[in-house]
Amino acid sequence: MFAGRERIRTIYQRDDIAEDYIQSRYGREPFGRALHECQARLLRNVLSRQQVRKLLEIAPGPARHTVYASATECAYGVDQSAAMLRLAKARLAEFGADGWRLVRGDAFHLPALEVVTPREPLEWMALCVCE
View 1 (cartoon, rainbow, N blue to C red):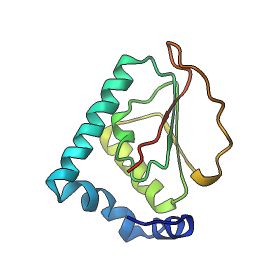
View 2 (cartoon, rainbow, N blue to C red):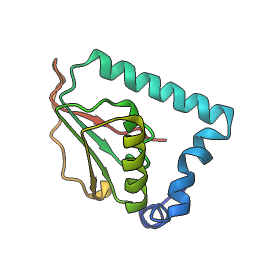
View 3 (tube, rainbow, N blue to C red):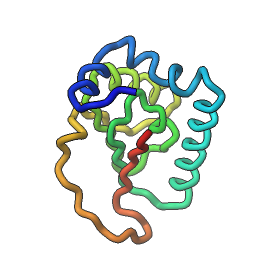
View 4 (tube, rainbow, N blue to C red):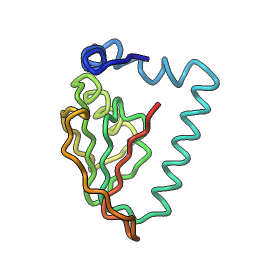
């Protein structure tokens, strides 16, 4: 795990780090695999129960969760790493998750989002899984 904004910005630009991200954290260890499967199941469950029209994933990395979120009316992934965005694009194509717009941006400097009380159907759903 990397800490500090500058370290995070720098390290995830590296192709070798981006390419090994999923395997190193969630593929080699039984706990990591179980955690990933639990998070993916939860995400699919929440998205299937809500009528989400717009979806924003902040720092999707290599689309570890994004591939399980079917495209909605409007779906964006914002990540600062070009290496991660390249992998995300490839994984989305591999999983057939169409309709995502991947944008390079800094999650540390996103405009403030208005906080609203959820109502059905949800207008926006922000997906941000913190580890």
